[in-house]
Length: 237
Ligand code: NAP
Image 1 (spheres, rainbow, N blue to C red):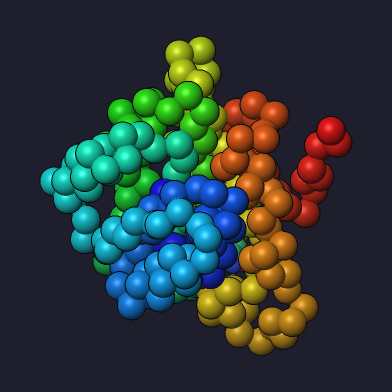
Image 2: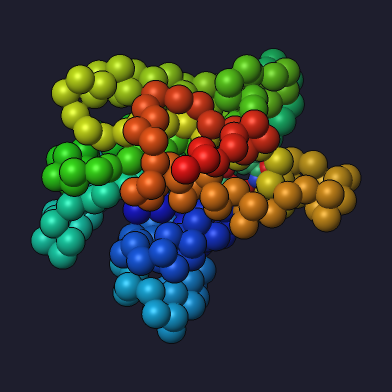
């Protein structure tokens, strides 16, 4: 499952996983984007993807349980979750920040991954080689002035990932890791740095060796680690 599959890094990852033979469940909020991605994947030789239209801002335990039941019936298990969907919110001094925006950003970027992971865990436990990847940010590892709820949501997300990694270390084969994609040419990056020339920023495609390594079956068993494409090198085999 890839959340926020309709655009940006999520879209490229869904394509890449499908091209490598994965049956990808595309979760996102804009149905037209999911449908065009579905058509692109379905018209290739890749396995038919699944579509889950879900606005993570307004989701609920009932909606996620309904989805989990449907996934269980159709696919039997989940081999991986990429928690990728996220909103940026407004960057401004804390003293001027809007409390409703805090709630929204924390819901999409943090509470939704909590809810999805908690309720999908039984399906992930049915896999014998599962991976859950949480997408953070440089400002999540070390919150930076004015990055407001976005930074704090990612900091909390890293906390969740480390908590789960510690809990599951000796009781499960599920690998839990964090990725900080760092500057990547997407709509979110353009919104965060409007004066930047996008051509100076790496593409989402350039992240794919790392994402495939973490989500695929040729990993090295890494667990509880933070990955950054600027320092990561594929292991020599
Ligand atoms: P993006 O282009 O803005 O894509 C974000 C995706 O999340 C979109 O598909 C969006 O759906 C989806 N999404 C947003 N709100 C949602 C909601 N309420 N419910 C369901 N889906 C929702 O962002 P990106 O740059 O690819 O970012 C991907 C991840 O990398 C994010 O976690 C981001 O924080 C992280 N990251 C990115 C960068 C970077 O430079 N790009 C750097 C560090 C970290 P719609 O298409 O329908 O809007």
